[in-house]
Length: 104
Image 1 (cartoon, rainbow, N blue to C red):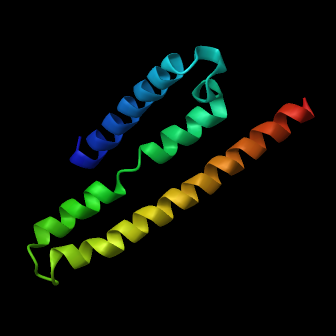
Image 2 (spheres, rainbow, N blue to C red):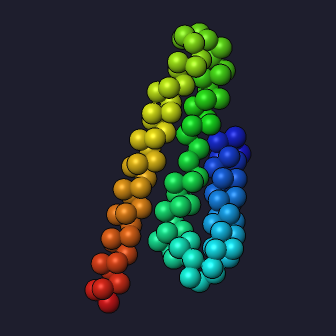
């Protein structure tokens, strides 16, 4: 198993545990994190691994393509775009789930 898969599984496991803990600490069944759709969205967005992987790649380049600090800026922008797109994806899942629940 390569590093990216291990990192991804580790982030998913840690964030799933963190979301359950936040739900328990902040009110149990009344918590915002106890709702399935909120937990899914938080898990998806919190488990992003692109930024640490991109920064590790830039660091390994050793300045071959320019200053490492400047090369990280597009990485941060790409990560922010990915978070926004994942938020739209989570919203799409919510709407799809709500429409299937009302159709039943």
